[in-house]
Amino acid sequence: MNYFVPVVDIKGTILMPTTLGRAKKWIKSGRATPFYNKGILCIRLNEEIKDPKLQEVAVGIDPGSKKEGLTVKSKAHTFLNIQADAVTWVKDHIEARRDARKFRRYRKTPCRKNRTNRSRGGLTPSTKARWQWKLRLLNWFKKMYHISVVIVEDIKAITKGQKKWDTSFSPLEVGKNWFYNQLDRYVLKQGWETKQMRDDLGLKKLSNKMSNDFHAHCVDSWVLANDAVSGHLTPDNKKVMLVRPLRFHRRQLHVFVPAKGNMRKRYGGTRSLGFKRGSLVRHVKHGLSYVGGVMRDRISIHSLDGKRLCQNAKPTDCCFITRLSWVVL
Image (cartoon, rainbow, N blue to C red; front, side):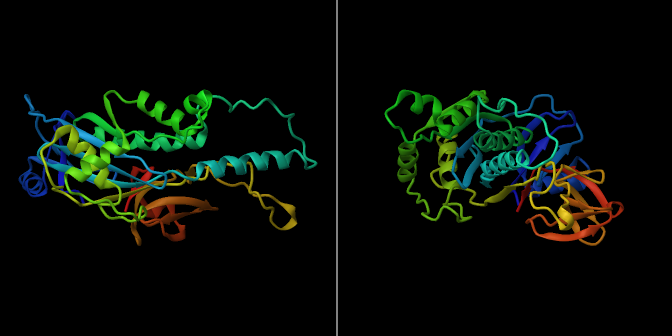
């Protein structure tokens, strides 16, 4: 899927990526060993590079409410374009947990007294999950590319003319400021600046924000990265990698709706018979897949596009490869 292959030496030092053809030659000659990093093919040189020649590599980020664009680019090449689904389900999970906790207190069951809400203060869970997702992708990039600067399109919340709301109460403003504090070196660009750069290069952006086309979101992230390192007047690589975060159901006290006999089963968790949920495995029948839930002594496995393959897979039929928190479609 990736046009350029990330390279590290035998000590793990990050080098500049190489072309796919050259990487195949190195692997065939025994100079390099292939491996995968969360769905991206990488190679490890079987030698130490004393004086690596590194170029400046920038990451452009175009935040969005449903889809987000990220581009990794140097002056000479565009290494990676990613369109990622945003994390949008945390707010509903928090509300469901809160409602379930309230309802338990109305039932005639032994329970502790209500305590002061300790979750107040700081970032709300839904806001933090959104910006943590971008940070996780950046940390993923840093394991493969020599990132020198991050360029972010600075989005703004609707102002109300009230100082407290505009600076402190808006989840968007609080979330983005938290994200900026996590970055080492970053540059902010306003939306009108991104549009101006896009217009100067003669590039168009699609109005359909749910499209998987390069010109839906990655065109803006590419423009932002290109402004930092320059080098191109037209995109040299329009291949888009689609990334979707896995949605885990955390452990609950029990399911919300009781079964027959008014019995409530336990629900959720992040372990499935020795596997961490989301683990990438190779099944003897279904091939490459990832681990889902558990039912008695069987586990469910899913294809990389999210479709459930079966619910009765034996743990002994699955060969563990690596842990995943997102899948590359």
